[in-house]
Image (tube, rainbow, N blue to C red; front, side):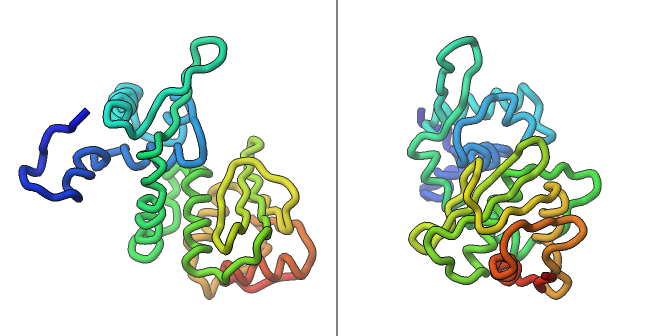
Length: 219
């Protein structure tokens, strides 16, 4: 489906925004980059969106070939996933996240929910921009509450973010809010591990992990 012309002049940036520039659209893409999600999963991670608005956004992204449905094998549950066009927006999400880190960084407000997907995408982007080049195969795992687990693994010199995890050189145990607060804190105040963030691993690997995040190792 071709979107209506909103900006009334020829510009491929404008045309891209006519597809994915509406409120919530890029955040839906963000939350689907790590794999298919159900409607209820998206509603939970997109704090503040109404069911009606989410339905409308998903329908629009389906019509414009950014998102597609993945019917469940049984029952009525439907999963949503990105098409190839949607997956191609991954570098755009990373670039916007990096811009936020560099120009709009702030610790989570008390009334702001912190969701693991956005915190972990920020972690990956921070490491890719500011961390040292990782050795291939290096694996770090984050364990949040409710069995919410994510892995960052170095592949060909870049960080790959996935759900789940095992076989880590360092395992992080923290609340989502504690990790997001650390990630947005001034570098000169960073210490790892600390009262809110536990690290499991050898002393050498914990030091390597802390230094990657510009933190003072406390081991």
